[in-house]
Amino acid sequence: QVQLVDSGGALVQAGGSLRLSCVASGRTSRISVMGWFRQAPGKEREFVSAIIGSGEDSTYYADSVKGRFTISRDNAKNTMYLQMNTLKPEDTAVYYCVATSGPAGLAERQYRYWGQGTQVTVSS
Image (tube, rainbow, N blue to C red; front, side):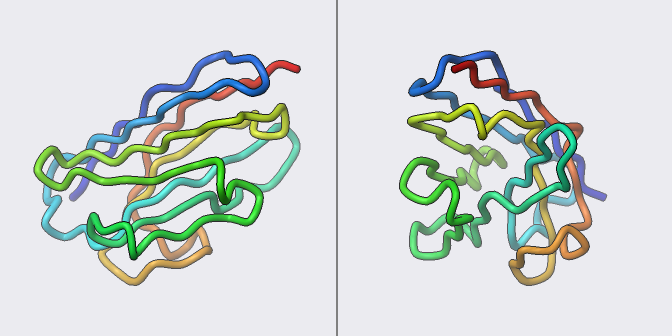
């Protein structure tokens, strides 16, 4: 099994920045892809970003965050990060760290492992 612990959420003003972290433990050698989903109040959970391995060439972003968010991964520390810049009120959501031993994708069902979620609130 794999356990994920995500953290770093906070209240921030529009235009500000936050960095989310996700630490993986357990059978981390099984993980091929890590990523982030988010769920805003009253909305369905949506894909935010994913990374395969730790290379910059294997990153994926939702159009809504492209150019503002950067995903990265430190395999030596079993930790993934989401650097969020130029935050907007519409970025307010609970952010979930996810991982899978399968291929990357946009669908929740593709990710077997989930963190508990961390709240990001962006005030206008």
